Image (cartoon, rainbow, N blue to C red; front, side, top):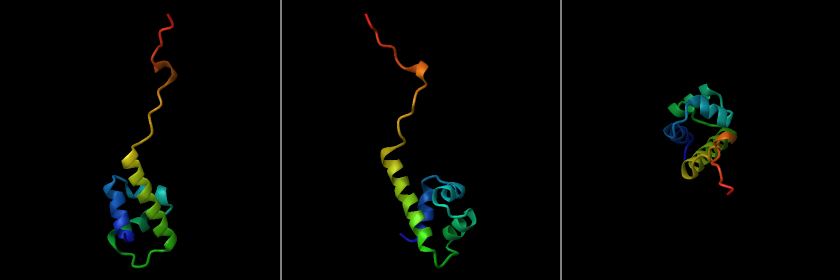
Length: 81
């Protein structure tokens, strides 16, 4: 995938540009420029960061988020008759 396609795919996964920034370390303005196709030559570290974020997003969609932890007071009681 091209960098622009990665940004668009991450956006399609529901991530905001700010969330993409947090996951990749790429500034939000640069994420925006990449997504709009205004950056013709993306640095390899940015490409790898976008690719890693995309792969992580796919894993989260496939597996889903981990099980929610319940507070201790909500655990089901066991009968100890």
